[in-house]
Amino acid sequence: MDFDSISRMNRNLPAWRNSHWKPRKARICKFAVWNIQNMDIENDGSTISGGPLRLVQGKSLLNILVPIAMALCFVSQQAVSQAAQPLQKHAPSIQYNRDVRPILSENCFSCHGPDHNKRLAGLRLDMWQPGLARKILVPGKPEQSALIVRVFAKPNGPIMPPAFSHKRLSAAQKQVLLQWVRQGAKYEPHWAFVPLPAHVLLPQVKDSAWPRNEIDRFVRARLEKEGIKPSPDAGKAGWLRRVTLDLINVPPTPGEVDAFLADRSPTSYEHIVDRLLASPHYGERMALPWLDVARYADSYGYQSDQLSPTWPYRDWVVKAFNENLSYDRFITYQLAGDLLPNATRDQRLATAFNRLHRMTNEGGSVPEEWRIEGVADRVKTFGSAFLGLTTECARCHDHKFDPITQREYYALGGFFNNIDEYG
Image (cartoon, rainbow, N blue to C red; front, side, top):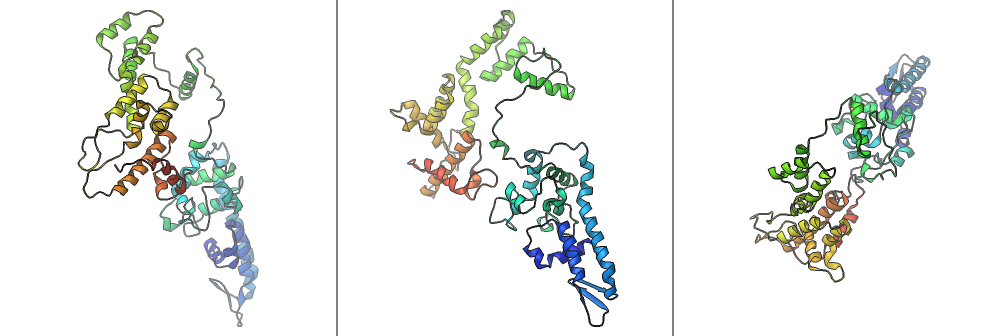
């Protein structure tokens, strides 16, 4: 009678079917002895039968099998504890979002995650409370946590992830989960939804003369941690090239370089930045990344890809940057400028942001189909541009990780469903 035989016996018992994922070591201790003590002795006294086991030598074997079962129980209880020994000393702090979530997401959430249609055993591991209620997680006690017991089970035992998933945890991943539970099994919301701290302590640095501002202190602290010396300051010519490319996307002219090198005033750098910010090329440079976010194009982007006269919106974006339009108005005008009281031409023009999706002139295209595609494209772009979220998953089902349900997706789409066009 070995460890896996006991596990198979346990799965045949009614108590196993009614249990709520009790830690395996507890089941083994209880049910292994139960099986042995409740074996049926045949009339001839030569055979003892109990579930999948068939042992000979008669009733006197009970005096031998019970101690053996208890010994095996003790060994099983020690398995998880022994696995944890290497990490008990100087164990690093385990963070759920950084260390644990990727492991669970890759190996566990497909069966025990947010998708209720694919969820097995009614168990969710993407939430903290269900795991606590069913003792899948016992904070600080990995040997009592069913998750850890299953993860460290033998390959032919009730191991998780199961063989049919074709997934297998590495030894390092198992140790991460083990140490996480030992440290309290703390869950964290998705990092994108964790509020920023109200105050951030500035790190201490050895060379306090090097930092010129608070951000420099973080840079210097990391350099000192890695044993790296900072690079020397760029020369005036190199700095001028960098700032000019950054702000207007073209290099400085030879005349501009000579004038800057000859300027010895303490405000020479500030003068350069002010001049570049006042350049009309500044708006052109800053508009480029936003036009990518807004999926701007000068053509249909589908089939024959004919030209699309959407350049007035492009010019409006350039103008908005050059006029230093505040970000709140920059957003409002693009989403609903035409709904503002006494909307100006520019405010109405900005709403072209909502029409920059693919278009088609295919003869067999279905107008309603392309209208809905336009609505979906607006929801997608709104999420990525203003919320920092990708919403496409929720078009077909509740989002697997982000807090967006399918109902919320289509409710949001209702705001973009009243444009009289089909693409």
